[in-house]
Length: 195
Image 1 (cartoon, helix red, strand yellow):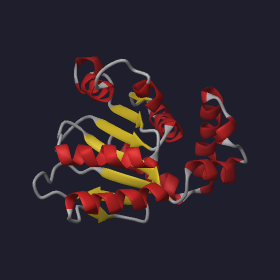
Image 2 (cartoon, one colour):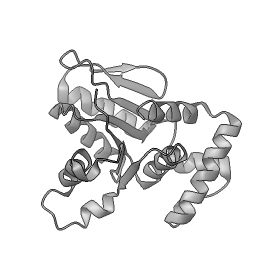
Image 3 (cartoon, one colour):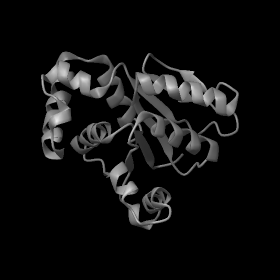
Image 4 (cartoon, one colour):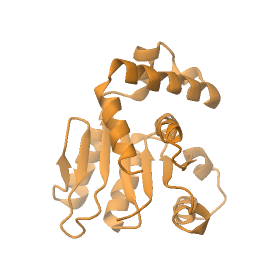
């Protein structure tokens, strides 16, 4: 079973939320931003970051959190991972319900078969008879994170710098736990089950 996890996140806010959950438990993680990949002068910066994570440079890092810069890019990155059958790491997808519709449609178009098993309203698992020990997780929030943060904390993530965003998301985590927000509890369980 792989000891590394790559979390494909729709955006930097989702990646930061997962990072904060992991940080609380002292679980090593690293965020690769979409912006850093776009601005890189390397030929294959995305492959380079994953290879570093899987190699000696990333030896101490358990989770690589990839800000994909949108739900369609996030879905396509995951489908490429699944198609490549790279068994060196587990993949977790974290996007909203809009991305869910896109991913499920594209998966059916690309593979012409059903390879996902629905576990709950928010969670799907891959099922692959060729490699049954590698199970990837796809987690979908009921609506986009920014709306949920605004509804629960009264704070708008769109107007925050990265430090302020982290503070707002910490508050969001606390309030989700206090209120027993189901999807958030399930997200924590999914992420921490890979730790």
